[in-house]
Image (cartoon, rainbow, N blue to C red; front, side, top):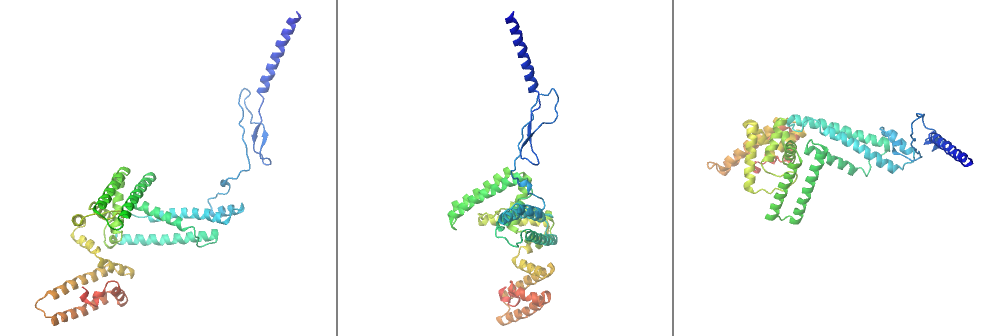
Length: 407
Protein backbone atom coordinates (compact mmCIF):
# COMPACT_ATOMS: atom_id res chain seq x y z
CA UNK A 1 0.00 0.00 0.00
CA UNK A 2 2.83 2.28 0.87
CA UNK A 3 4.63 1.57 -2.43
CA UNK A 4 1.42 2.27 -4.35
CA UNK A 5 1.12 5.71 -2.76
CA UNK A 6 4.71 6.54 -3.63
CA UNK A 7 4.11 5.52 -7.21
CA UNK A 8 1.12 7.88 -7.64
CA UNK A 9 3.03 10.71 -5.93
CA UNK A 10 5.91 10.26 -8.39
CA UNK A 11 3.55 10.35 -11.38
CA UNK A 12 1.88 13.50 -10.03
CA UNK A 13 5.20 15.32 -9.60
CA UNK A 14 6.36 14.39 -13.14
CA UNK A 15 3.13 15.73 -14.61
CA UNK A 16 3.53 18.99 -12.67
CA UNK A 17 7.11 19.41 -13.89
CA UNK A 18 6.01 18.79 -17.49
CA UNK A 19 3.29 21.45 -17.24
CA UNK A 20 5.78 23.96 -15.78
CA UNK A 21 8.24 23.25 -18.58
CA UNK A 22 5.59 23.85 -21.25
CA UNK A 23 4.62 27.19 -19.64
CA UNK A 24 8.22 28.34 -19.48
CA UNK A 25 8.77 27.36 -23.12
CA UNK A 26 5.79 29.53 -24.19
CA UNK A 27 7.05 32.67 -22.41
CA UNK A 28 8.34 35.61 -24.66
CA UNK A 29 12.04 35.53 -25.50
CA UNK A 30 14.22 38.69 -25.27
CA UNK A 31 15.84 39.96 -28.53
CA UNK A 32 18.66 42.34 -29.44
CA UNK A 33 17.74 45.68 -31.00
CA UNK A 34 19.45 49.07 -31.29
CA UNK A 35 19.21 51.83 -28.72
CA UNK A 36 20.03 55.52 -28.97
CA UNK A 37 22.36 55.26 -25.98
CA UNK A 38 23.72 51.73 -26.19
CA UNK A 39 25.13 49.93 -29.27
CA UNK A 40 23.41 46.67 -28.30
CA UNK A 41 20.76 45.88 -25.59
CA UNK A 42 17.93 43.46 -24.89
CA UNK A 43 14.21 44.12 -25.18
CA UNK A 44 11.01 42.12 -25.46
CA UNK A 45 9.58 41.39 -28.90
CA UNK A 46 6.34 42.71 -30.31
CA UNK A 47 3.11 41.15 -29.02
CA UNK A 48 2.51 37.67 -30.45
CA UNK A 49 -0.42 35.30 -30.63
CA UNK A 50 -0.81 33.19 -27.51
CA UNK A 51 -0.57 29.96 -29.47
CA UNK A 52 2.29 31.00 -31.84
CA UNK A 53 5.50 29.05 -31.34
CA UNK A 54 8.09 31.50 -32.86
CA UNK A 55 11.41 32.94 -31.79
CA UNK A 56 12.23 36.55 -32.73
CA UNK A 57 15.52 36.95 -34.70
CA UNK A 58 18.58 38.33 -33.00
CA UNK A 59 20.18 41.38 -34.68
CA UNK A 60 23.29 43.36 -33.80
CA UNK A 61 24.18 46.98 -34.45
CA UNK A 62 27.73 48.30 -34.20
CA UNK A 63 29.35 51.65 -34.90
CA UNK A 64 30.81 50.49 -38.27
CA UNK A 65 31.28 53.21 -40.94
CA UNK A 66 29.38 53.14 -44.28
CA UNK A 67 30.07 55.41 -47.29
CA UNK A 68 26.29 55.73 -47.58
CA UNK A 69 26.47 58.09 -44.64
CA UNK A 70 28.57 60.55 -46.69
CA UNK A 71 27.23 60.15 -50.22
CA UNK A 72 25.11 62.91 -51.69
CA UNK A 73 23.75 63.79 -55.12
CA UNK A 74 24.99 67.33 -54.46
CA UNK A 75 28.75 67.64 -54.99
CA UNK A 76 29.11 70.55 -52.54
CA UNK A 77 27.42 68.50 -49.81
CA UNK A 78 29.49 65.44 -50.69
CA UNK A 79 32.77 67.36 -50.40
CA UNK A 80 31.65 68.89 -47.11
CA UNK A 81 30.77 65.43 -45.76
CA UNK A 82 34.15 64.03 -46.79
CA UNK A 83 36.03 66.87 -45.14
CA UNK A 84 33.89 66.60 -41.99
CA UNK A 85 35.13 63.03 -41.36
CA UNK A 86 38.75 64.00 -41.98
CA UNK A 87 39.14 62.49 -45.44
CA UNK A 88 42.54 63.52 -46.92
CA UNK A 89 42.38 66.23 -49.59
CA UNK A 90 44.12 64.05 -52.18
CA UNK A 91 41.51 61.32 -51.66
CA UNK A 92 38.72 63.89 -51.87
CA UNK A 93 40.23 65.21 -55.10
CA UNK A 94 40.50 61.74 -56.64
CA UNK A 95 36.91 60.84 -55.69
CA UNK A 96 35.42 64.11 -56.91
CA UNK A 97 37.43 64.30 -60.13
CA UNK A 98 36.45 60.77 -61.12
CA UNK A 99 32.79 61.56 -60.47
CA UNK A 100 32.87 64.90 -62.28
CA UNK A 101 34.66 63.41 -65.30
CA UNK A 102 32.13 60.60 -65.52
CA UNK A 103 29.23 63.03 -65.27
CA UNK A 104 30.56 65.42 -67.93
CA UNK A 105 31.70 62.61 -70.23
CA UNK A 106 28.10 61.40 -70.34
CA UNK A 107 26.90 64.94 -71.09
CA UNK A 108 29.55 65.31 -73.82
CA UNK A 109 28.42 62.07 -75.43
CA UNK A 110 24.83 63.27 -75.38
CA UNK A 111 25.82 66.51 -77.16
CA UNK A 112 28.02 64.75 -79.72
CA UNK A 113 25.21 62.38 -80.62
CA UNK A 114 22.66 65.12 -81.13
CA UNK A 115 21.36 65.46 -84.65
CA UNK A 116 21.64 63.07 -87.55
CA UNK A 117 24.95 61.39 -88.27
CA UNK A 118 24.46 61.64 -92.02
CA UNK A 119 23.98 65.40 -92.27
CA UNK A 120 26.02 67.07 -95.01
CA UNK A 121 26.70 70.46 -96.57
CA UNK A 122 25.49 73.59 -94.78
CA UNK A 123 23.30 71.57 -92.42
CA UNK A 124 26.26 69.51 -91.29
CA UNK A 125 28.42 72.60 -90.77
CA UNK A 126 25.71 74.45 -88.83
CA UNK A 127 25.01 71.42 -86.64
CA UNK A 128 28.73 71.04 -85.92
CA UNK A 129 29.07 74.72 -85.04
CA UNK A 130 26.14 74.44 -82.62
CA UNK A 131 27.64 71.34 -81.01
CA UNK A 132 31.04 73.02 -80.72
CA UNK A 133 29.54 76.00 -78.90
CA UNK A 134 27.68 73.73 -76.50
CA UNK A 135 30.78 71.61 -75.88
CA UNK A 136 32.82 74.73 -75.11
CA UNK A 137 30.17 75.90 -72.66
CA UNK A 138 30.13 72.45 -71.08
CA UNK A 139 33.91 72.51 -70.66
CA UNK A 140 33.72 75.93 -68.95
CA UNK A 141 31.00 74.60 -66.65
CA UNK A 142 33.21 71.60 -65.75
CA UNK A 143 36.19 73.81 -64.96
CA UNK A 144 34.05 76.15 -62.84
CA UNK A 145 32.61 73.25 -60.87
CA UNK A 146 36.06 71.76 -60.18
CA UNK A 147 37.40 75.14 -59.14
CA UNK A 148 34.50 75.69 -56.76
CA UNK A 149 34.75 72.23 -55.20
CA UNK A 150 38.50 71.79 -55.01
CA UNK A 151 40.03 75.20 -55.60
CA UNK A 152 42.07 74.03 -58.61
CA UNK A 153 41.83 74.76 -62.31
CA UNK A 154 44.18 72.05 -63.53
CA UNK A 155 44.89 68.67 -62.01
CA UNK A 156 47.65 66.30 -63.18
CA UNK A 157 45.72 63.07 -62.78
CA UNK A 158 42.71 63.97 -64.92
CA UNK A 159 44.18 63.62 -68.41
CA UNK A 160 43.89 59.87 -68.63
CA UNK A 161 40.30 59.94 -67.42
CA UNK A 162 39.33 62.49 -70.06
CA UNK A 163 41.11 60.55 -72.81
CA UNK A 164 39.45 57.28 -71.82
CA UNK A 165 35.99 58.82 -71.87
CA UNK A 166 36.65 60.64 -75.17
CA UNK A 167 38.00 57.51 -76.87
CA UNK A 168 35.02 55.50 -75.68
CA UNK A 169 32.61 58.18 -76.91
CA UNK A 170 34.32 58.19 -80.31
CA UNK A 171 34.22 54.40 -80.63
CA UNK A 172 30.53 54.33 -79.69
CA UNK A 173 29.86 57.03 -82.27
CA UNK A 174 31.63 55.09 -85.02
CA UNK A 175 30.16 51.70 -84.13
CA UNK A 176 26.66 53.12 -84.11
CA UNK A 177 23.67 52.39 -81.85
CA UNK A 178 23.70 48.89 -80.35
CA UNK A 179 23.12 47.24 -76.95
CA UNK A 180 25.93 47.57 -74.41
CA UNK A 181 26.79 43.87 -74.50
CA UNK A 182 26.99 43.92 -78.30
CA UNK A 183 29.14 47.06 -78.22
CA UNK A 184 31.60 45.47 -75.79
CA UNK A 185 31.87 42.35 -77.95
CA UNK A 186 32.42 44.38 -81.13
CA UNK A 187 35.13 46.48 -79.46
CA UNK A 188 36.84 43.31 -78.20
CA UNK A 189 36.87 41.84 -81.71
CA UNK A 190 38.26 45.00 -83.27
CA UNK A 191 40.99 45.30 -80.62
CA UNK A 192 41.88 41.61 -80.95
CA UNK A 193 42.37 41.82 -84.70
CA UNK A 194 44.12 45.16 -84.42
CA UNK A 195 46.71 43.47 -82.20
CA UNK A 196 47.14 40.64 -84.74
CA UNK A 197 47.58 43.23 -87.50
CA UNK A 198 50.23 45.07 -85.47
CA UNK A 199 52.14 41.83 -84.94
CA UNK A 200 52.34 41.25 -88.69
CA UNK A 201 53.44 44.84 -89.36
CA UNK A 202 56.12 44.70 -86.65
CA UNK A 203 57.46 41.55 -88.18
CA UNK A 204 57.51 43.14 -91.64
CA UNK A 205 59.37 46.21 -90.34
CA UNK A 206 58.26 48.24 -93.34
CA UNK A 207 59.06 45.56 -95.93
CA UNK A 208 55.89 43.64 -96.70
CA UNK A 209 56.22 40.41 -98.66
CA UNK A 210 53.45 38.67 -100.57
CA UNK A 211 52.82 36.23 -97.70
CA UNK A 212 52.49 39.18 -95.30
CA UNK A 213 49.93 40.85 -97.55
CA UNK A 214 48.04 37.57 -97.85
CA UNK A 215 48.02 37.17 -94.06
CA UNK A 216 46.73 40.71 -93.51
CA UNK A 217 43.98 40.17 -96.06
CA UNK A 218 43.00 36.91 -94.36
CA UNK A 219 42.89 38.59 -90.95
CA UNK A 220 40.71 41.40 -92.31
CA UNK A 221 38.25 38.94 -93.84
CA UNK A 222 38.09 36.89 -90.63
CA UNK A 223 37.46 40.05 -88.61
CA UNK A 224 34.44 40.96 -90.73
CA UNK A 225 33.15 37.39 -90.59
CA UNK A 226 33.22 37.45 -86.79
CA UNK A 227 31.65 40.90 -86.71
CA UNK A 228 28.88 39.60 -88.98
CA UNK A 229 28.23 36.85 -86.43
CA UNK A 230 28.25 39.27 -83.48
CA UNK A 231 26.01 41.96 -85.02
CA UNK A 232 22.64 42.04 -86.67
CA UNK A 233 22.63 42.78 -90.43
CA UNK A 234 21.41 46.32 -89.73
CA UNK A 235 24.13 46.92 -87.11
CA UNK A 236 26.81 45.55 -89.44
CA UNK A 237 25.66 47.76 -92.31
CA UNK A 238 25.69 50.85 -90.08
CA UNK A 239 29.17 49.97 -88.84
CA UNK A 240 30.44 49.60 -92.43
CA UNK A 241 28.86 52.90 -93.44
CA UNK A 242 30.19 54.85 -90.47
CA UNK A 243 33.62 53.25 -90.67
CA UNK A 244 33.83 54.06 -94.36
CA UNK A 245 32.85 57.69 -94.04
CA UNK A 246 35.24 58.13 -91.12
CA UNK A 247 38.29 56.44 -92.62
CA UNK A 248 37.96 57.26 -96.32
CA UNK A 249 36.10 60.59 -96.35
CA UNK A 250 36.99 61.67 -92.82
CA UNK A 251 33.48 63.16 -92.92
CA UNK A 252 34.92 66.48 -94.13
CA UNK A 253 34.81 66.15 -97.91
CA UNK A 254 31.09 65.51 -97.69
CA UNK A 255 30.73 68.90 -96.01
CA UNK A 256 31.73 70.47 -99.34
CA UNK A 257 28.77 68.96 -101.18
CA UNK A 258 25.07 69.71 -100.71
CA UNK A 259 23.64 66.20 -100.25
CA UNK A 260 21.03 64.74 -97.93
CA UNK A 261 21.78 62.53 -94.94
CA UNK A 262 20.39 59.49 -96.78
CA UNK A 263 22.63 60.21 -99.78
CA UNK A 264 25.72 60.61 -97.59
CA UNK A 265 25.03 57.21 -96.05
CA UNK A 266 24.55 55.58 -99.44
CA UNK A 267 27.82 57.08 -100.67
CA UNK A 268 29.60 55.67 -97.63
CA UNK A 269 28.11 52.23 -98.23
CA UNK A 270 29.14 52.42 -101.89
CA UNK A 271 32.71 53.11 -100.80
CA UNK A 272 32.64 50.20 -98.36
CA UNK A 273 31.29 47.91 -101.08
CA UNK A 274 34.01 49.00 -103.50
CA UNK A 275 36.96 47.57 -101.59
CA UNK A 276 39.28 49.62 -99.48
CA UNK A 277 40.11 49.02 -95.83
CA UNK A 278 38.46 50.43 -92.72
CA UNK A 279 39.80 51.01 -89.21
CA UNK A 280 43.36 51.84 -90.29
CA UNK A 281 43.96 48.48 -91.94
CA UNK A 282 46.72 48.64 -94.59
CA UNK A 283 45.65 48.73 -98.21
CA UNK A 284 46.42 45.37 -99.82
CA UNK A 285 44.71 45.91 -103.18
CA UNK A 286 46.59 45.50 -106.41
CA UNK A 287 46.63 48.36 -108.92
CA UNK A 288 44.06 46.54 -111.03
CA UNK A 289 41.78 46.03 -108.04
CA UNK A 290 42.08 49.67 -107.03
CA UNK A 291 41.21 50.86 -110.51
CA UNK A 292 38.21 48.53 -110.80
CA UNK A 293 36.93 49.42 -107.34
CA UNK A 294 37.29 53.15 -107.98
CA UNK A 295 35.29 52.87 -111.20
CA UNK A 296 32.64 50.88 -109.34
CA UNK A 297 32.43 53.50 -106.61
CA UNK A 298 32.26 56.48 -108.97
CA UNK A 299 29.56 54.79 -111.04
CA UNK A 300 27.48 54.17 -107.93
CA UNK A 301 27.77 57.82 -106.86
CA UNK A 302 26.94 59.09 -110.36
CA UNK A 303 23.80 56.94 -110.41
CA UNK A 304 22.81 58.15 -106.95
CA UNK A 305 23.34 61.90 -107.50
CA UNK A 306 22.84 62.39 -111.21
CA UNK A 307 25.29 64.04 -113.61
CA UNK A 308 25.05 67.64 -112.37
CA UNK A 309 25.41 66.90 -108.67
CA UNK A 310 27.98 64.21 -109.37
CA UNK A 311 30.13 66.95 -110.92
CA UNK A 312 29.89 68.84 -107.62
CA UNK A 313 30.85 65.68 -105.74
CA UNK A 314 33.78 65.04 -108.04
CA UNK A 315 34.99 68.61 -107.63
CA UNK A 316 34.83 68.25 -103.84
CA UNK A 317 37.38 65.43 -104.02
CA UNK A 318 39.92 67.70 -105.75
CA UNK A 319 42.69 68.83 -103.41
CA UNK A 320 42.86 72.30 -104.99
CA UNK A 321 39.14 72.88 -104.51
CA UNK A 322 39.37 71.72 -100.89
CA UNK A 323 42.08 74.34 -100.33
CA UNK A 324 39.85 77.03 -101.76
CA UNK A 325 36.83 75.80 -99.83
CA UNK A 326 38.70 75.80 -96.52
CA UNK A 327 40.15 79.23 -97.26
CA UNK A 328 36.67 80.63 -97.89
CA UNK A 329 35.33 78.95 -94.77
CA UNK A 330 38.09 80.50 -92.65
CA UNK A 331 37.23 83.97 -93.94
CA UNK A 332 33.45 83.70 -94.16
CA UNK A 333 33.26 83.55 -97.97
CA UNK A 334 30.49 81.67 -99.72
CA UNK A 335 31.07 78.35 -101.44
CA UNK A 336 30.24 80.08 -104.73
CA UNK A 337 33.49 82.05 -104.44
CA UNK A 338 35.51 78.85 -104.05
CA UNK A 339 33.75 77.38 -107.07
CA UNK A 340 34.44 80.56 -109.07
CA UNK A 341 38.20 80.53 -108.33
CA UNK A 342 38.37 76.79 -109.00
CA UNK A 343 36.72 77.18 -112.41
CA UNK A 344 39.06 80.08 -113.27
CA UNK A 345 42.01 77.90 -112.42
CA UNK A 346 40.72 75.03 -114.56
CA UNK A 347 40.10 77.28 -117.58
CA UNK A 348 43.48 78.95 -117.13
CA UNK A 349 45.26 75.59 -116.97
CA UNK A 350 43.53 74.40 -120.14
CA UNK A 351 44.44 77.61 -121.98
CA UNK A 352 48.06 77.46 -120.83
CA UNK A 353 48.32 73.90 -122.14
CA UNK A 354 46.78 74.95 -125.47
CA UNK A 355 49.24 77.82 -125.85
CA UNK A 356 52.19 75.56 -125.12
CA UNK A 357 51.10 73.10 -127.78
CA UNK A 358 50.09 75.64 -130.47
CA UNK A 359 52.59 75.21 -133.31
CA UNK A 360 51.50 78.49 -134.91
CA UNK A 361 53.02 80.53 -132.06
CA UNK A 362 56.69 81.29 -131.68
CA UNK A 363 58.18 81.68 -128.20
CA UNK A 364 57.78 85.47 -128.11
CA UNK A 365 54.12 85.35 -129.14
CA UNK A 366 53.44 82.53 -126.69
CA UNK A 367 55.01 84.49 -123.82
CA UNK A 368 53.02 87.60 -124.73
CA UNK A 369 49.77 85.65 -124.52
CA UNK A 370 50.83 84.18 -121.16
CA UNK A 371 51.68 87.60 -119.75
CA UNK A 372 48.35 89.05 -120.82
CA UNK A 373 46.54 86.09 -119.28
CA UNK A 374 48.57 86.45 -116.09
CA UNK A 375 47.46 90.08 -115.66
CA UNK A 376 43.81 89.27 -116.32
CA UNK A 377 43.85 86.34 -113.88
CA UNK A 378 45.42 88.38 -111.09
CA UNK A 379 42.82 91.10 -111.40
CA UNK A 380 39.95 88.61 -111.43
CA UNK A 381 41.21 86.67 -108.40
CA UNK A 382 41.94 89.86 -106.47
CA UNK A 383 38.44 91.12 -107.19
CA UNK A 384 36.86 87.85 -106.02
CA UNK A 385 38.90 87.35 -102.84
CA UNK A 386 40.04 90.78 -101.75
CA UNK A 387 43.65 91.71 -101.11
CA UNK A 388 44.01 90.12 -97.65
CA UNK A 389 42.51 86.72 -98.54
CA UNK A 390 44.31 86.78 -101.90
CA UNK A 391 47.68 87.13 -100.16
CA UNK A 392 46.87 84.16 -97.93
CA UNK A 393 45.77 82.11 -100.95
CA UNK A 394 49.15 82.71 -102.60
CA UNK A 395 50.71 81.01 -99.57
CA UNK A 396 48.20 78.14 -99.51
CA UNK A 397 48.58 76.73 -103.00
CA UNK A 398 47.69 79.76 -105.13
CA UNK A 399 51.16 80.45 -106.56
CA UNK A 400 49.72 79.96 -110.06
CA UNK A 401 47.97 83.33 -109.75
CA UNK A 402 51.33 85.12 -110.06
CA UNK A 403 53.17 82.41 -112.00
CA UNK A 404 51.27 80.53 -114.70
CA UNK A 405 54.32 78.38 -115.36
CA UNK A 406 53.36 76.35 -112.26
CA UNK A 407 50.25 75.08 -114.03
